[in-house]
Image (cartoon, rainbow, N blue to C red; front, side, top):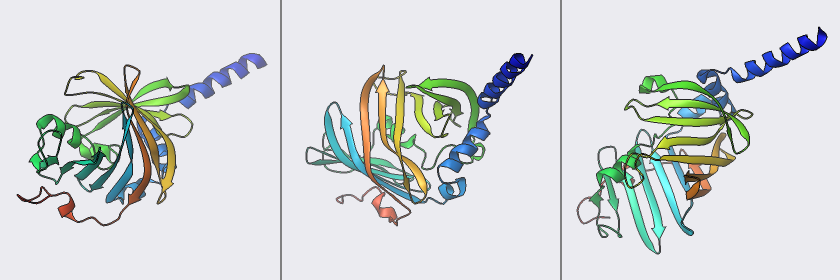
Length: 241
């Protein structure tokens, strides 16, 4: 009888550990990474690091400002590629495609840039018109994870895998919407979490398709809540860069 009781308690404990709700997991995630209020207080962010693609490394920066402004700069063989959105217009300077003058960004490239949320999509997700549901557990590179299914207002679906021990995302899965790989799934892995201004950020990300590494990003610095003027993001007037 004692052995049976011990077995029942063990099974109950395992079931309780896995029967999480989406909101419980998100509450633990925000608590373990600095707190939801501190995340909501982030108004600007600048990330500096290197991107590795097909064996080549390129230095670059990503500067963003609430609610939706972003500027990406990548130095490729001495030439600067810029992609930006000023809240109204997605534009770029692409010396490899359209010369060194600012141009409106092609729709596919703009769609990819604008699909990124400034803040975590899980912050006040319901007020954004998003839905988050618990999708069970899965193993990611030997680690047990809780899987959350995120459905955005436009119908786009993402899967986020939260480490069951620390409750931080270690992988996300999303379907590519455009380009030669349209319809395939991209898997983004996150690691090397470090503290910046009391918040925890992954300093290394790697994107894979069909098990093959497509892109790696290694961050050197992250700056939070520094001041950036709007003209950093604005579509330049004709003749200005």
